[in-house]
Image (cartoon, rainbow, N blue to C red; front, side, top):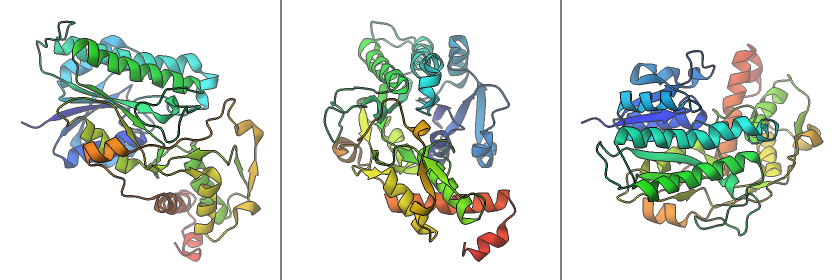
Length: 343
């Protein structure tokens, strides 16, 4: 029979790539939607004929129970979250409700529909659950690179909420025998990344500057180091985690560190410009508590899942700049400028 997958956050960057991947794998894919007027539904518009949607909200327990009961999924991917870290200092309670309690509500929905109890005996079918954990849980990292056993020291309300979601997922696995895993994903980007994130802010800013629509690009801490990969690669790891005989948590990244300075240098260089002529540091964009160094130890995900990234850092940055040049040119009808720039 055709396997069914339910994805929360299906209109986000990861959700759209995951939906594409699962459809190629022959799945029937359902997306949890909070209301009908989702402004990012365009991200999955090309898949509309192959997707199904169900109403639900990570802040509403009853709606999640109804959604899981209706879809009867084989796999649930909980990607729904408020994912912009700086926002978590301004709206810490909301971020906690969605990113922490939302995980608990979805786990409870699965437990109830599956008929799981403390006896670990399921009266219904076993639903496999993926939780989108985050490298931000490591925060002020106790060691570098970070692995599955590295102690968490989150440095933002976002990281704290994600740590709760990760631990409650593990708790349901250990308490109820639920097939539940946490994917500790390091930074992953793409042309579908939100414009508020630094890599997309850079690629979009470079495109606008190249086309004469913008003069300067404000950034925060350009010396912060991150492990950046391509989101399209990372969703393959999510799927692989749910195909194993035994559920476990995995760190997913490239194992390479790059600075914001390096990312913007590559982006400007790709269009023949010098970043020093256009970038300035805006103190308002510096985090209250910065995470300086994040780098993944990918030993287990490579050896046990057979996963590895296919898009390298330089190719990722160039991919994003090229996509934004086309996006900005189309948006402003500057096709002639794009042609003149050689794109």
